[in-house]
Structure formats: structure tokens, C-alpha cells
Image (cartoon, rainbow, N blue to C red; front, side, top):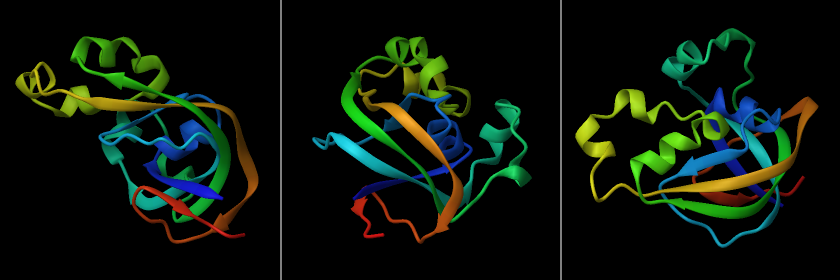
Length: 135
């Protein structure tokens, strides 16, 4: 099965269904069910901005699954900001205004539904991109 690794707190937000768009700088043609892996890396600023207690978050484990049904392309910062309540990316707060309003701004939003947060997570070493996992 395919798997995608995310930093915390984004992995938790996605697996719990609070986050429905995962932002990436790369696109994918993959559509279907995938596992959600919480990487060993924590985004402390995101925890602070989103008021999430970092010590409660699991790291280095597969914590859930979801269904990637489409990809939305963000060509402008305005479109990206408009969907903030679906992706919760703090990129806008730590990027210079010129980089976000640049004509070179491009992000991909993986549209996710039917997520499940596992009651028992599975220790696993993540990888970059969409990777295969055999459980």
C-alpha cells in the first residue's frame, strides 16, 4: 500500500479528518487509499500557531489512512490562502511576502477524504514522496 510521511502536527490533523488538503511542492498521479505516517520531525511552529500540544503527538509511526481522490494546483498565493482552513499550512507566516506573491508560486494540494486515525499506531521509518509499505 502507498504511504505518505508528514511532519507532526500535520499527520495528526490529516488522519483525524481536521485537515483535508495536504500541501506539497510536487504533484502525483496516484489516486486511492494510502497510509499516513508521522515522521520523526516535529514542526514546533505549527504546533504553537495551531495550539496543539506537541508532547501528545506520535512520531515515527503510521498513524492512520485516507483516500487521495484528486490534486488541486495552487498557482497564486491568494488561492492558497483561501483554502487555509483545509490545509493549515503555516508557510504564509514564515515566508517572505515577496516569495508568496511571486509569479513562481506553485503548490499542489492533495485532496483527501475518508480518513481514519488508528487507535494503535505502527512503528515505521518513513521515506520521501509516496512510498510502498507492506504490512
